[in-house]
Length: 75
Image 1: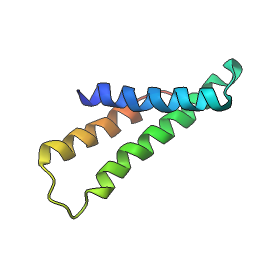
Image 2: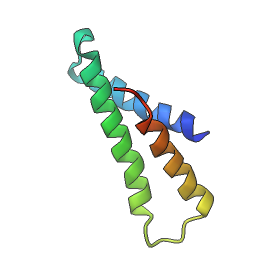
Image 3: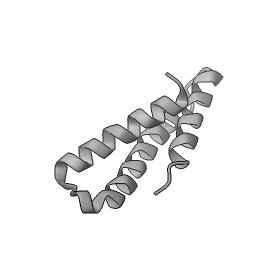
Image 4: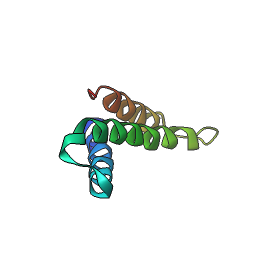
């Protein structure tokens, strides 16, 4: 899975979760903002949790790219 695909998967997961919990169509912008922040948190946690543990550079780079892709989503 490419970083862009992973970013989309995380964003979509949180978007659907927030929408199901209580989002309304008129609140789509708020739902998207919250989903973006949740997806960023999840991706950054992967990077943070692996600090101090030998991590293959490709894996670390992958998650940095996932964060970059999520950050590029417009709110």
